Image (cartoon, rainbow, N blue to C red):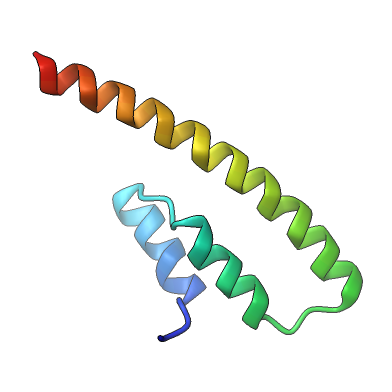
Length: 70
């Protein structure tokens, strides 16, 4: 399994407005060489990302469900 490229994920986000899956973001964090304090801060940010990703996914499913029923 290849490690996701954060630069490609950011480019995809800018080009297509797609959010990278939290699993890929977590893998990027695990493979980054961060100092302990940076790692802790990034983990806090990741937790927030995960929460918001879940909320966005829930909204997207509702919107797509409504569109599918139309």
